[in-house]
Length: 300
Image (cartoon, rainbow, N blue to C red):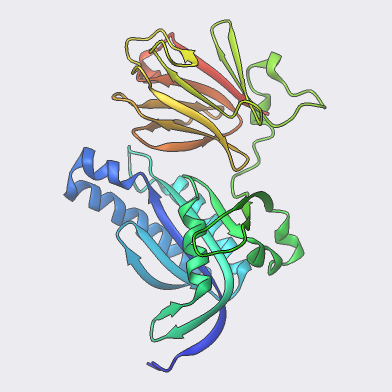
């Protein structure tokens, strides 16, 4: 192995399992480690298929490199899809978050160093569950046919950087245009509507958008949307508009159940997920039990 430092231009990617700390707290070390290992194996399989090189694993995180930004983007999408498809957590759904950057690095032995590595790590640190974020440099290095998957979402300030960096989100999910037409017909998007999330609880309708960016759900009197359910915690969950996505985060004792328009049900336990399409939310009570205190939602 050549240990002489070499300069190279590579894509650096960090991917980790969202909410893994809660897994260890809830399941114990042995079972949680087993699930984390299975999930990492799924991710590593995809990086190998897409010409990636595994640099290291750090707990529930992998660091890897790719020869091109295109390979990194395609690998990141493949990782998200593989984890969603293969369900390495079994009955307990696991989510991953990914950030990558493209730039100059120093290769020494089996490791890489440099400012580009730091930028990739910082981008990954602001990524949420089921998200892929990247940078201007990586976006500029993509061929035209892949740039359609990427859109600008924000400018982020990072420690050690004098200027804020443009952050881009990669669309890896299947097209959910049809799913947004299922249910809630009165919520359908008019041509002039802006990006927003509509929540309906019985006859009460609440909107989250650029002007009203967050809401707390629960049975407590201080919640913006009070849910009359004995299964709900006082401050059960929070929905926030961030980086162009609507993210729901569970803070409860019993968890939050999300049912998407394809009838897939996700159970959040001190975890977060991006809401998409149309669906329903149940605070603390599984849909299999026929809850009556259900919040319907639509992203439009």
